[in-house]
Length: 146
Image (cartoon, rainbow, N blue to C red; front, side, top):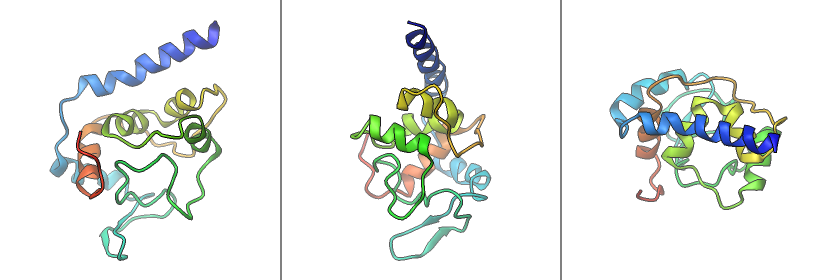
């Protein structure tokens, strides 16, 4: 019973940012993405850099609509792999990405169903999450229309 209550609380908490923000602004999200460049790059399929960045996190090109933790060759952490295993059909949507970047640890715990799960991503984006999600949609040519 306790884990059900905790799960409901985490779910409600993660839903707040999605409800509290209007549709994102991709141009503003491109500027906000500067915070993400330390760990993430955006490089298209031909190897052209859209945004030069780090390789600590996965390349975020075409991430929207992609299955969770599915970039070939990237070594994901156990927490996000458990979330992907628990939700094999889940793909990144703006709503899921907003919840994830707001609190990656809480998202991984909720989606994996494991209160001990941890996220390798420790950075939390406290504002403009919808803008970053809109920007990542703009660099995801295969993203489904919402």
